[in-house]
Image (cartoon, rainbow, N blue to C red; front, side, top):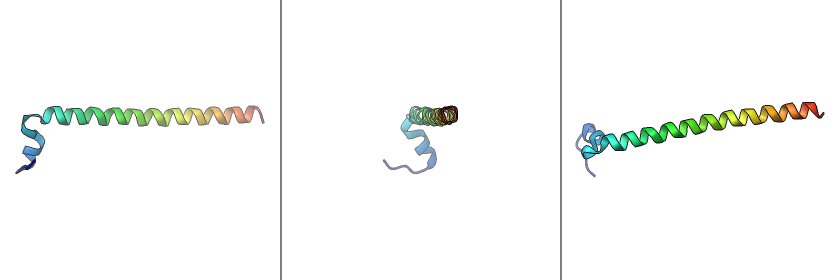
Length: 56
């Protein structure tokens, strides 16, 4: 596709709201997944540390 301006890129032939909306949702879901992964990892490490100190 050839666009002559950034406005045409954003509009994407009238489908821009669906394309950019979908990308926004995907980015939000990935961000939530990364945050949850970080929190689960931190909880697992904390639990492991606690178990190691109790059984040492």
